[in-house]
Length: 119
Image (cartoon, rainbow, N blue to C red; front, side, top):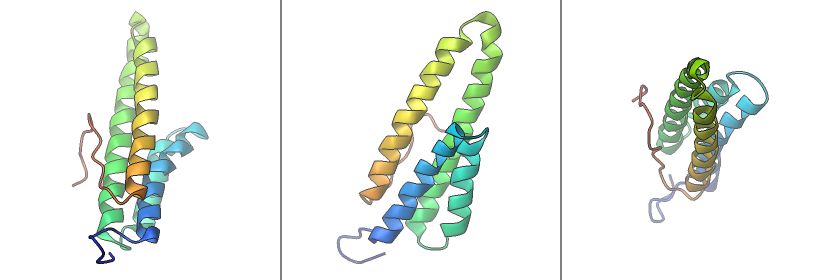
């Protein structure tokens, strides 16, 4: 970390942002939303504690989103799963974009509604 106001360097902020935005791999292939953040975090977590923290946060959120999506699919039997899945998807999209922007600004972002399995 650079010592000016305790703001991470541009490279560190960029990798932290990539940890969040790697979740968009889920738009390309199944479970890409889990694999993208996992791979970026595993490769770059030693770079800086900020990248390590944001990588864990991104992965925890994507695990939570995946579990919620699976629950929504199960609830499609009683129809309520369709609007819930749309809500979960839009919420995940918006929160992931906010998290990536905040990480690029050097601010640690904590997702709401996230089950934090990785500490």
